[in-house]
Image (cartoon, rainbow, N blue to C red):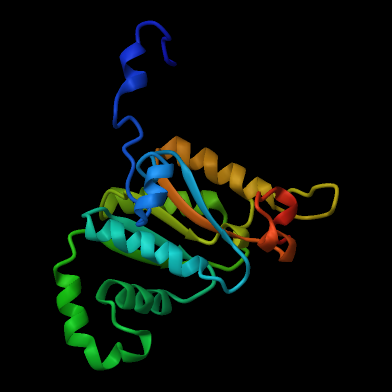
Amino acid sequence: FGHDYFEDFEKRYEKDHRDPITTGWPEMDEVTKGGLGKGEIFVYVAPPSQGKTARQIFTSCKNLQQGHNVVYFTLEMTEVEIGQRFDACLSEIHLDKLVENKDEIRKCLEELPGKLKIIEEEYCATTPRRIFNKVKKLEDTVFIVDLVVIDYADVCAPTKSMKDDDGIIGGIHVYQEMKTLAQRYQKRTLTAAQTNREGAEADIITPKHFEG
């Protein structure tokens, strides 16, 4: 058990020990040493209505196009709404033009090598544990999941109700639980967080910059 510092010397230099997959942006992949690695959480941080869902869908689409399987948990929008946004991103057809271009979209999806499952969960009531339990069931019956997307962490609930000195329930505890489960199941996990007004102007984001 563990990592033998002397016997496992070569393991520390194996190129693909993280087995990363793309974020969809070459510059970001370079900074993150290849993208999203197994057991890691990747968080897009932005103010309200600034493209958090769009970024998560974009990353998902780029991985679907590379043959990776994605499960997308949506806690705010419906499964159909998210599905339409995937249609628009993958086909590069505007949302307003989807209906009149259904045949073109269907052809695009038939050529897609990766698999996608979109699952709608309860707003502010779904816990990370519930999500990862569903990932495990999905893998037992449908396909191996390469990327777990949780849209988004701020509206998840902690498995156990926790409160800090300011009376904020959940908060960072959701991220801690999510990280624990991502490590346990060795799943690349993508989510998003919402900043407050001060965070939108900050160069470095700290816990005080997140919406409560």
